Length: 307
Image 1 (cartoon, rainbow, N blue to C red):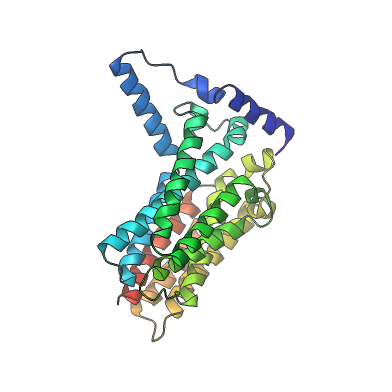
Image 2: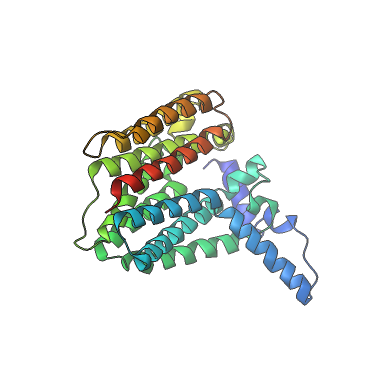
């Protein structure tokens, strides 16, 4: 991290969150005032956990668990473990990025806006991570270890790897291991088919490139030079599209038997949507398109994996 950014981050920590600690006026010391403070903090925590990706990944895991044959208790357990892991990753990400977000004036971030303190986000991240461990292992030793390896990869991205040329690798690993977490929790602990793990890994890597696009300039200004930042917005958008299209192709062509009409339609629609989204690589459209493709892929998975 550059010296300027480090100084800002240290200043934020030393002042109880720096700008984050001063931005929101204190509510009166009354029951109503305390309720306002609690509500503000909870809202800030909710916004700083990256709720859309966290909810999407948790829903994907739950649907995959149903399709793979888990009963209701197993689905709830798996979804709880994934949710805890995703919350820990989201809060860790915002806390780790506080110095950079202050340097670039990211007022859309709750920590910068002052709606929640840095200490509260750090505690929430640690608590969610601690909760993730027993929930993951409750699905079975091997399944739990696989999931925790994916969560550890995501934390590694937040704390170090996002500023390196292998910034894509934690996403590919964490997403690629998610289907294994689901199937290894079944009787006999079967591994998922290779095409499914490959599709998930490609989708994760594509999501990384698409998610970084709006922030490339700010990242470069604060010393974050992952692979998307090195490639630039246009090439990263094109690579994101190819990776996500490859993910859909693996889902369509991987299972035995003939490709269904839905599979062909999904492949064509994915290619068209990604082509249109990549015409504006600087905005959120490519990432939102990836999320939409992932949702369509889930429908295909449910049809292919039903016991």
